[in-house]
Image (cartoon, rainbow over all chains, first blue to last red; front, side):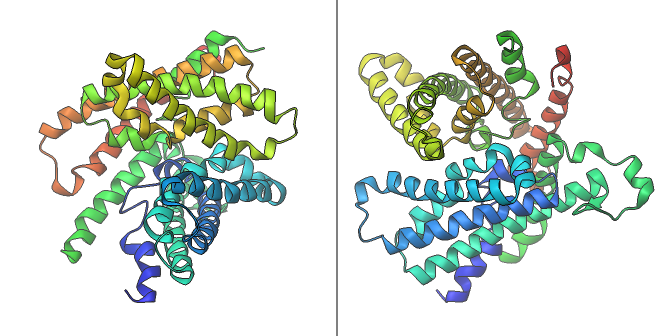
Length: 200
Length: 194
């Protein structure tokens, strides 16, 4: 496969959240505002990228029988790093994301890429794959965050864009938990209707 | 100290783990196709969640805290839970065959279930004592099981309903879950709990 395809595949065609439906917990939980969604996406991308790099460098050294625990240890190292970095430099964001920062360690998207890609491919390919999948995850979260923040609060990244009148009576349930389920359900239905046809 | 009964209700209904906290969504959508499998999975989650809460509470308060190793929390917890699940599986297989047959196949799925790890983190973040951590884990597990079984019943009906093809499968399940979450919002404020 061409190198460029490695990057775009994870970004759009095999988007983790909207197409493959993995990594749903953080996608639904922290997509209440664009800032939280984008921050969560970048944190997961960081962990995915660096765990992919380390695992593909060490792929000949890791014994096959204990590869899963080794992957989990490598991933949890980077999760701990981002956990502490975020706590130090972005305390507001860290508080908003709550336990979902340490829970990146059980995100099946990251373990899935380690097992399915980084363990079998070269470092450069793993970097491209990690960036593609990670940024695809960020993109999906940001889209959901934008829809929910605009409808639920009338703002985008904190800026009022739907006017003062809307701000007084927004669709409040969009930023509450039920809105997350509804938004991803409608997005998935639209993808099924318009995107699947083209590929078939 | 907080009242254990209120912690139980809060974990069970008001902050329901699936619908309000968004933890354990993979089994919620993946295993809830029939009421029977949903029950097995729910039982396994209650069981492992309680055991994991005990073990990680002890590990955190007896080992990590005195030795100043709190930064190892994430790595230690996930490894503890993974080995605990393996151990439970082997133990049940050897000594409690009926129990193993009822929930054995769900145990490996639970290792990377974010609900289990999430509850152990919440126990620490909320600074629960041992009793409250137990009550919190059991309440959360029961909340998970009740929602799983209800949702499985809804999905069994959805299979027979005439649904637009682009809504079939995941989309309609998400929307049904959204309506359930809306109903569960009604519990917030119950007994003055948030």
